[in-house]
Image 1: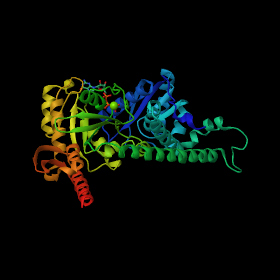
Image 2 (image 1 turned 30 degrees about the horizontal axis):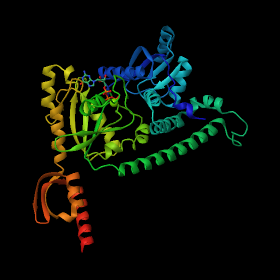
Image 3 (image 1 turned 180 degrees about the horizontal axis):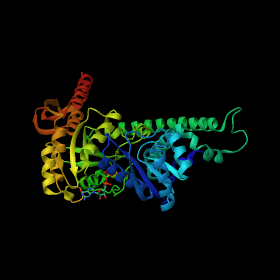
Amino acid sequence: MLEDVRKPSITKEKAILVGIYGPDTPKWLAGEYLDELELLADTAGASTEEKVLQNRPQPDPSTYIGKGKLNQLKAKVSETGSDLLIFDDDLTATQVRNIEKTANVKVLDRSGLILDIFASRAKTSAAKTQVELAQLQYLLPRLTRFWTHLSRQKGGIGTKGPGETQIETDRRLIGERISTLKDKLEKLDRQRTTQRKGRSENPRVALVGYTNAGKSTLMNALTDTNVLAEDRLFATLDSTVRRLELENHDILLSDTVGFIRKLPHNLIESFKSTLDEVREADLLLHVVDASSNLIDDYIDVVNTTLEELDIKDVKKVLVFNKIDKVEPSRLMELKKGFPGAIFVSAERSMGLDKLQGQIELMIEEDYHPFVYTVPMAHYKAVAFLHDVGVVDSEHFEGNSVTIKGSITEADRNRFDAMLSKLETAVI
Ligand SMILES: Nc1nc2c(ncn2[C@@H]2O[C@H](COP(=O)(O)OP(=O)(O)OP(=O)(O)O)[C@@H](O)[C@H]2O)c(=O)[nH]1
Ligand SMILES: [Mg+2]
């Protein structure tokens, strides 16, 4: 019944984009934000007719941009024949209602637009469920503007509880749908956990970063696969995992959903489990578009979003991508400013060897040297060392073998437990 909220509500509509600037956000930055909003609008299928920036220290509580500006906006809407106003900040239900009433067109905010894009891009059952949940949670406090839309679909005798107003009924229906979706997600989560348990213990590396930074292109370049990569925002919604053979380690590399400033909180919340790949990684490759003007901003957004997702203790390396688009002098500047970073071009396969070397180095930080002398009868334990550790040498003497190499602490504990179990079994 409520499923149609998943469907994108925009089909090649004409849009006017609106933002504000002031002491906290200088005009040039607000302009960059609107450029990004234009890209979002384009991804959603809307063409931008005009961008409007208004100098205001604070949004106006009832109209966001102020009454006078709103009237100008109304004129622009009819001049350009636009169908849609998109605001760079989240709007309250009151603001939406007032703006819609004056300008007489559909009004959307950044979160609504991002949710729309996610809805149209979600392919798997998990992504669809996560997006629908986020959409309904977004909708609930803004219900005033949607109730006619919902009531049209409902109809039928007995759908309305006694004494309930239309909006209360809608709220109840949405509430019920939200708990159904949460149950479904929990089930999917359990399935995923079971699947993960059966997986091998290879080191895990995850690509994270701002949307459009080139994570999927890098995944393809490193693993020779064909994950969808394109010049649109949120090309990737579901995580993909691929094996990558490095010199000493086979790792599992995962590509994940990109982040963006003001990613709706509900969306982050409902994508938490998809991002388990990131949470459980041994190393994060934080991919940054080196050709962007907003590098520091992007890095901050990604770090803050990771914190919001409770991903705090995973090692990170910054990977500046798209260096083919960067002037040599700017590149020098970046290398000086970010001494620990790696510089690559995923598209031109530049710097990939160095990146692979760095991944290996950082993984090896977790490996500690060991020397074990194991009876040959415990061949299972020997096989385990070969499987999870890096074996440098083996020396056979009599009925036992002395193995030297390195292994992670977790695997060393597993090995110790395995050995003592085998020894107990023999006695
Ligand atoms: N010039 C240049 N373009 C690149 C490079 N790497 C990626 N791109 C382009 O950047 C765009 C985005 O690439 P994706 O790999 O889809 O980016 P992503 O980070 O996976 O994006 P989302 O999945 O949307 O978050 C595509 O048009 C790529 O062709 C590069 O090294 N150089
Ligand atoms: Mg991608």
